[in-house]
Length: 403
Image 1: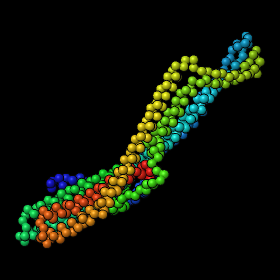
Image 2: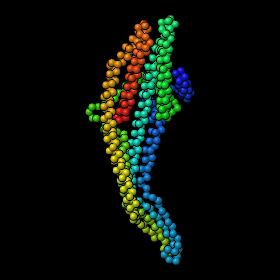
Image 3: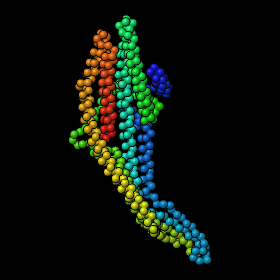
Image 4: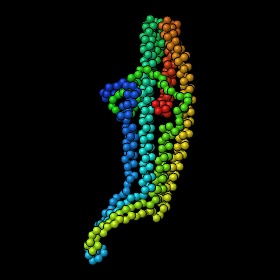
């Protein structure tokens, strides 16, 4: 047992040394931490870059192709050498230009929504880590309190042993229980460092940011009874699938438009018998003589549109079921927490107080003392475990409610 503890303590000390040498701890609230993430998170930055990319592509819709210029010199109309200047501009298909513009516009909306969705997901992850850190810190505080009490009990057991009031086994058992608590505390400290590292990854920083709060408290959420806020189409995943349908539909129309005729316009300047100034203009129209390849591309685009519509329908059903489950779980967790706060926490305090008094008075022995302290500690640990689960659940609700 002691060897395991030494190994864990060494690893923890090494981790703490590395963190302290890299940066100092900065205590901030969640809003401060979120402001840093908005400015520095790589995923948010990349999502914004995709929006800028889509805006640039939108400008390519008005692409008329290249202007061609031809110069011909020779005996065009007689034995004399004449010159012919020709300009020709491909104007493309008006229908294709229009549908291309709409396609890029729908793509831009999709990427803007994707950026918003990425921001919400990072916020949910960061908030989850923030309150997980508070939970681990709360457990460390509980164990610190228990360790302090056990250390005093070990000293008391040692005094009893010297005075011949108890045997060596009782003293050894109390010391063993103390070592277990110290190892558990060390493990939670390792968890705290892991959470700190994950927060640093999300913030894209070498600095260490930790919550300024010292106590894990319940998060609050307002769920209006009227005007149910859980509009399925506002769920980020559903909105993304809906916009994916719009993109697929725009692309399908684009492939159909590419069968339409393309226009061109030109200008020429001709010399005849070395007399210049003969000029004119020309217009042209071109269209694919073989429609099958383009028709096949349109059919493939229509299949993709059908797939997108199916995924959208599935996501709506899935979101509705998830929201229904969240609401049921919310009611159940509220009742469980209320049970702890109205009854079990008072019992834990009473058990803890009486156990200490009875043990010192000699009314109970080691077994009863340790059992009572363990029961009291477990009640508090279960309570904070429930609070952590509740907070993580509320963070999920925040994601749907756009908190």
